Length: 534
Image (cartoon, one colour):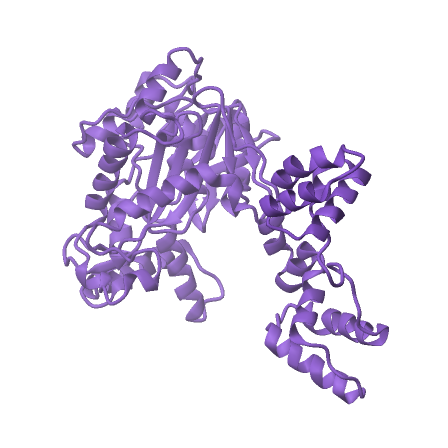
């Protein structure tokens, strides 16, 4: 900066009433400027008394001064509004060419390129970005980001989000590729701990959220034991607030009612603002980066993948990858120092949870049911009908003849062999198929069968035709298992669903007897698995 040394040299001279030529020459020598320049600076310093007076105005027109004729300025302004400020986003070179043609057609000498560029730069930048790139781009560029999402204690704010995993998986039997699964993550903001996760071949849904949240809230000892995982996973308890985006699964009536039942507040991000989910987005990015070291990765994009053949290199099955992911989360991620915390997430959780008052579901078996999707149905003498399938149980007899016989009928898409009727007092009763000879099916199989029957010209679809079509589908899939990836993927969906058949909680009314309890099959250990394929 030249103003400060000039001020130090010239201020003593400016305070004198008379100057000698020797003093002026010495000041000019020190500052390496001419004698007339010294006199001008001294006069300006005496007039303004500020350091900025030491910088003289450069010769020529001032910045921003316009010297073109008004008619040329008007032509440039109109051209900028009409051609440049458009979503088609003309390049500067193309825009200048059109402007030159316009000026010549009017008989004017066109302005030079730099002059036109200066007129564009003089426009408000935010307005220019909004008109050329849209509101979303302008908001992302110019919106001021306030302080990040912060929580004072564990489970105060929890984030849930989904991503498609950058990894190809293979079939357990044929070891051929079956595609990429979805990952649903539940994360605690205060400690950055992963509270729960869910792998699924289905797109995110109400059930995906219910299963991931159930794993997050309940203890995970049996889940770890099933997968031979010795790493500690101490997280459990009800969150106070769940922070989510505006996906349809988070606006479902089942999710909203389940949160209401358990006193959980839902906080939605503003639409089209992914920056508000920064914590869990960074976590997903971290996990995806580590997954890219596994064989069969698809990398983040086609440029990174290059000529790497993901399907040919894939070798991990669904269950194998689920265990690897759990070990990665419970091992390195939870125990490495987190840059935002200055300590490992597990250490932050251990020290914070001791002083935090946590809530837990009174009935862990019924917690999942509170978040399962449901339909409202009338209870009739022949039971309840859902998805064109009849369900019947003696536990519904006391509901007949009551005015409030339209009740919520909840279902687990992984296994439609039974539904769960929510009683007026909040308890649930499990209601199996009316025809107990029917095999368990998934909602995915049911929808595929109904669609196939309607494509064949069936105007109405009954229960018998649905199960017949599903049996035929299964036979075709088994035969085609080694042929197409979609067939292999469909078989894996069904096998995992069968593996977890009966895994949903089997509650019964509070007044039931021990004999009734023995009659209702309860879920096996580790029932609340992190797998959702139907």
